[in-house]
Length: 420
Image (cartoon, rainbow, N blue to C red):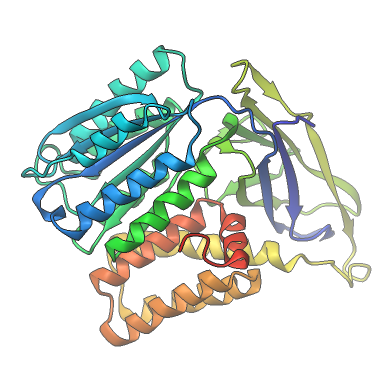
């Protein structure tokens, strides 16, 4: 097994019933186990439209300034802002040049309009230039806005065109919506495309916590462009619920982007089997590959074959069910279903039913924080119906679930509030 990443395949059970079709839920957990320690660039992009005036822009600058203390001298920070136009305040420079970075952050000025498309279009050129310099192994984007696009292309699919180019270059992101006037559908789509997380921050004073927690996790790379290949014997098939995947001969390929040191990303899905005869049967062969951030070479973990026992109904009395796997798969399936329904609009009673399923799944997983958040959203639905504030909070929770980073969330809950 490679020293840069390790993975663990957890099927919901190790026993299948003979002579009947089965659906086997599973979770594959991929963990970054080695800090390669090459420099990383953080690009801080802040909405400076007039609606950010007051506490929003103050708190955004304050949070950006504190990120400097979390990075190493050799890491880079670039500072950008946008209103109706994109503004390069400071191209990425090493953190050791702290005074220049601080001045750039403080100097951001307000303007009119909001052009989100131009931000990502220009960032494509910025990232190309940065990688051409050969000074960083990865790029992390912190994108913050409080409003809808008012200038330039406004359709989500059009805005996603340059976003997907950034993803192809290995950029990952924290996407933050501040307040209650932004487009959560757009921001959550951007975050998903960039293998990141969308964070709803209703109160500006909470920007500091969101930005610092992301930086602490994302600042050290273990492996770049991580790909999971899952192959199955003839007649079996695989469905992945929380990540985009591609069908390949006898299996699927899942692209995860970069994985940071000590970060765990779960790939969540199900294996569908035809009726199988009794005996020990192979159900999957798994291999993980990635770009070594030090050498730039693609490396492969040894492929591992996984088997289950297929027993007759009379023999299979004790199935050895892994309840946490079933709960996580169910949580992701519910989140995906709810995401699609929110896009189209849904009634109060329907949302309450979906939220009840999410609460039960998060409690079975032992994620008290997620369960409490979801219960809070359900209380708001009972009081005010399917409001804009509710849909923003739901979009943020769904983004965290679909990201496959539930382990990090649960660890933070055990530690308590890391950032006061």
